[in-house]
Length: 393
Image (cartoon, rainbow, N blue to C red):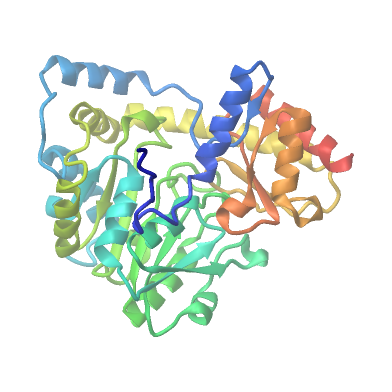
């Protein structure tokens, strides 16, 4: 007799990542013979810089194939701690390697943080639109995600006043992302300072996802909460190498947090994945220490992203009155769909034009769509022309 599967309460309500689902559908249609341009991916289309690949090979040749400490190899954690200390500019004690946990991608770092910090009965504020996994991570921790709609006049960013409006006596923290996925908006230093001040005053944990920090167009690097916060005893800062260094498959992210939080996150990780892949940690060490080579590679990628962004905006200017968030970072365009129905518009684009984009419903804003320009410039331009045609049809 067959035994029917009934999902446990742990996963019964969880939803598949919508951004991954779009890319999977695009690949399936391509495999079936359709000519598909995937503008739904959140992955740089550049090759990993050669010096990082060489460092990976050297690590393998040196026998770095065994377990490491759960929280990562010490030299890597020391480099991350030193950068965090530099950002603090002497405002408090130096960040130590013991406050750094290296994980299998920044997604795991965020998951570790939400599990360690939040639980049943806690409200956690999320700036909306928000990356698809935040809601699910908070839910898996049995906490309650509370969406805070961003201000359209500020590029859909949240403000202290908006956060206060949605706070409750049960609010325990908030998740913030800058540069922002899906909009490409960047919080400036003053905006971040105001939010960190509020979190400190209210006794909230602030989890700051800064994975796109080096992909910016007005500044060499986006401001970090570490740059501006008066104190860091309520901060968990998450970053990684996936986006800026085109190392998505290496699966390395990290968190910087107060020692008790890092200890809890390490204990959790010891019972899930243990250490991140050893050779990937050594590759990341090269990316973070061979700065001249890394900076040149990042500058080249950002320059091409900027050119694609500008070309895309120029084409989309053919749509009168298009509501488009100004993308100062990351590699996304976020625009309001015709008829305020992002799902219908995304379906039309895929069915009629073979262009895959992500409906804004995935990010809590169903009126919008996200378009990635992490694709060849010719594909980005073809996709923008298709959007214009579909819009005007």
